[in-house]
Amino acid sequence: MEKLYEGKAKVLYPEGEDTLRVYFKDEATAFNARKRGLIPGKGVVNNKVSAALFRYLEAHGIRTHFLEEVSEREMRVKRVEILPLEVILRFRAAGSFAKRYGLEEGTPLKGPLVEFSLKNDPLGDPLICPEAILALGLAGEAELEGVRATTLKVGELLKAFFAERGLEVVDFKLEFGRREGEILLADEISPDTMRLWDMETGEPLDKDRFRKDLGGVAEAYQEVLRRVLGEGV
Ligand code: TMP
Image: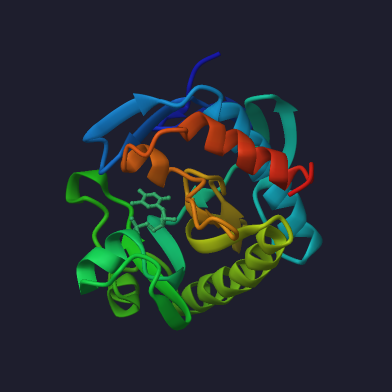
C-alpha cells in the first residue's frame, strides 16, 4: 500500500478519509538524525506501549487520536492535522534542558515545566515561546491553553502509572493534532519520547541508552513493555 508519509521512526499509510495506519519501525535516530541505528524489537514495543498509554489516558478523560492496535507493529488512528509543536513536560532537569542551563542530570524542578519546540528538522526543533506560537498563528490562544492543561494532566497520569511499575517519569514529549475543531493527543508515547528511570537503581530505561551508548538498549525497551503490560515490577 502507498505510504502517506515516512518519518524517522514511523510510516503512515492512508486508510480512507478519516483514519490512518501507523507502522512502527526499529530504526532509531538521535541528535536530529546525526546518529542512526537499529533497536531490534523497538517498533513492537513502541506500538504496544503507545497503545496501552493511549487507552489508559482515554480512560482518564484525555482525548487522543488512538483507535485500535491492528498488529504487533501497527495501530489505527484518527487523521489529524498535527500542530508543528513538540510539547515537552519536565519533572527533573535532563537532556537539552540540563545542558542549556548547566545543570546536573536529575536535578529536581520546583514543579512540572511545560516547554515548546517548533517541529522543524532543518532548524533543529528550536525552543519557541508561547507568544511566538501565537504571533506565528501556529495555534490559537484557547488551543494553546488547552494543550498546556492537557500536557500537565497527562504528566500527572503518566507519573502515577509508571510509579506503580517502579519507573520514574523524568520528562516526555507530546504532539497534538486538530480534528473538526478539537485538539487531540497524537503521535506516540514510548521509550523513544520519554525518559524513564528505574526507581530502585536510577538506570535509564529509554532512548538515552541509545543516545549515550549505554548498551542494553533493546533489553531496556523490552523491560518497559513488560512493566507497562503489568507483568510485575
Ligand atoms: P530533550 O531533553 O532532549 O529536549 O528531550 C526532552 C524529552 O523529549 C525527552 O523525553 C525525549 C523527548 N524527545 C523526543 O521525543 N523527540 C526529540 O526529537 C527530542 C529531542 C526529545
